[in-house]
Image (cartoon, rainbow, N blue to C red):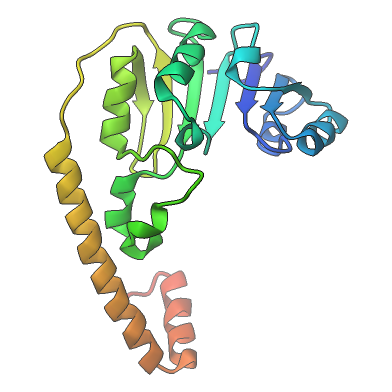
Length: 209
């Protein structure tokens, strides 16, 4: 997509820092609820609206939902609002939030419990989230285990798949990762700091041991 002369919306985008990367050649819109953020973004030349999805009265070319979906209090209600503002087959939806399956790869040092936070209502692995989006008619263009993803709405709904066993296996792998990391952290306590610093310098230069 040529990101020029596009309507780009950042939902829950705080002070609009992400939008500034898209330059003045696009129409930038920040939707948030916190007045100081909105006031600052407005001073930076960004169009601001107090509110969420229900306040969008046009079809954006790009919608950014970065660390927002895990805070929704009703997924079905909010996803229906998102569908209403889609230009079918055209609107690009960038969605990002912590993916449970990235923990087995070392995020949070494998600590699943560290992901549990009071403001977070929903938790997904990348493949469960992709399947859920498919169920509502969104097609994945890209996704990784951190759930940095891009979806486009096609309206073609797919069936829901039971990923229980895969999720369970990923949680077991995460626990193994956590135990290994505890051991590594213990070993680091026994190694002189200057030696750790030296090893890191070599690794940064691409030298392997």
